[in-house]
Image (cartoon, rainbow, N blue to C red; front, side, top):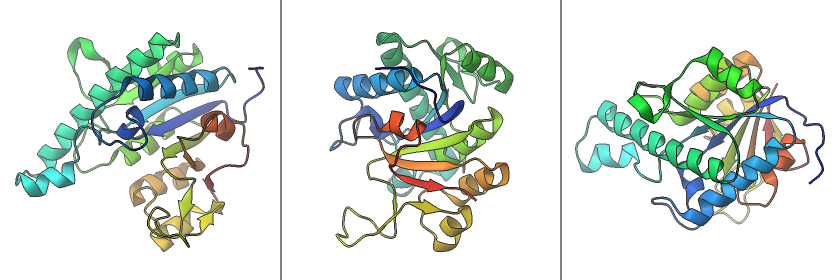
Length: 242
């Protein structure tokens, strides 16, 4: 692949935990899926863009389910979810190292030798050294989603864009997987998302990006070269800004 100038100097890539399994799976991790996502990130990095990553934990634990089934307080369920993101962070770091992509793993809470404690200045230093930085542990606090963690980290590392990887081609007016007449939005404002209650990200995440004028691009992570295409601002997904 020929190197070319990226449209962004630094991005925050938001991955779901399900990015570490195949498109039709939801639980655990799968080698081939890990390899594919790692290679996609490595190819994107060749564009000379600095890449931070926030990863979810839904492939291991979904708090809202266990709150109900186990009568678990949400704060405790969220703590388990934070640990799930750490497991995914360790897994993704190893997958990236396996394809020759230098990677640091930082956690929102202390966890000994497993990951470094998050520090924004140190994270930016690593990014400037052309290392991918994975941010695990959410915000480190209960009651906040990993979408909010992604927006927060994007603000803290001064990212030029937040790229949210999903299983569909962008933001739609209704669920395209169950509604054949769903209409895709190519562009939206932050206020459009909030007023239409589109639920692409939670309101706190959208508001943080709006306040710091960080554009959000929602795209399909399962389409080949889409991470690279989004970085180069080629037509794909839905762009949220303004």
